[in-house]
Length: 389
Image (cartoon, rainbow, N blue to C red; front, side, top):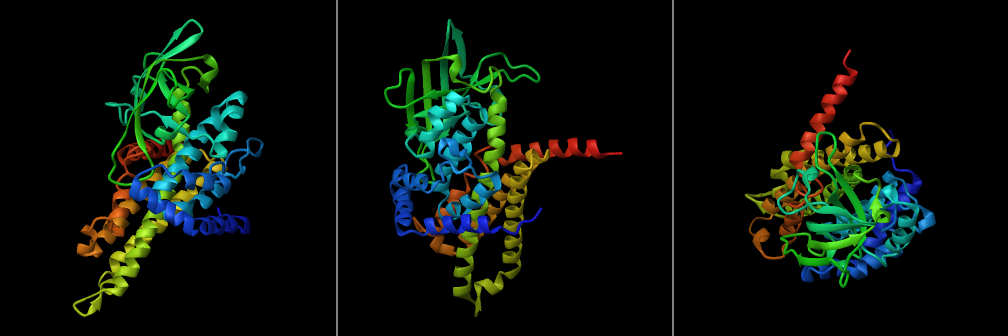
């Protein structure tokens, strides 16, 4: 395993840096923060640059990058804006990933080319009111009536649902029993005017403004067998494997947020003095430890991505490690920056408060840190039992 970037990977990263440094992008980031509106202009530009289809095969209009290369290209976007990177992530590593990995040829042809071009935004709807981390216990019901499926229920905390025209939705199609969650994934059309679909609300959030978080309800929504994504009663596999891969990108999102806060903190503490010494000099041990934590989390993200590329059986563990370590680093780095800015941090719209509020979401979405610890412990136990002689 070699983490020295190849010339091609350096080019991918440099292209992302150049894109994100454009003055128009900086203006779009600020506009999204101030208005809390979905960044349409940014997403169209991101689509033009290929970021909405990095891992989609070329036949559907994507770039055909492998998982590690796409992660490297994604990093600078996350460094510039957690919110806008979440919009990219929701499109590419959630919606596109589910469709390209589990979709039929007809489903891929219908959705992926438009998704890659930014002509259609998608979302992935799994969480329900009152059903959080116990994702196998969903209640949105899909009942077969003749040649149709009738969907009824509510989904919440869905990124980009307010602008989405398609959704991957987890449904209950059988009773839950040991080893059989009884869920099915459907790929359905949504949006204004779609019969049986209602966008209930767009939530007010404390951070990551510009990445809308929504709730919608399906009431006697009609769909058919051809809209099943994957296999009947195979919905858990669709969502589990999709989230495993998305978690690595969440981990990198967190690492880049941590790095951004760390860089800003170094600039601030080196320029400010207290009791005759720079704040940086007074904080050297803590700064070194924080740097260690961020770089360790970054390597865990690269390791997980490399495992995915090479189908390493420990990918599941590596994915959760990357997400957990990234979340912990983001919290530690942004809080340290917030503290070192003192009273400045308590001013509305201060950079330090913005970054901290963005970071607070990361240990929650894509499986909270507590769930990641359970997954890691389970994987460790299985591995140790396997290698024990």
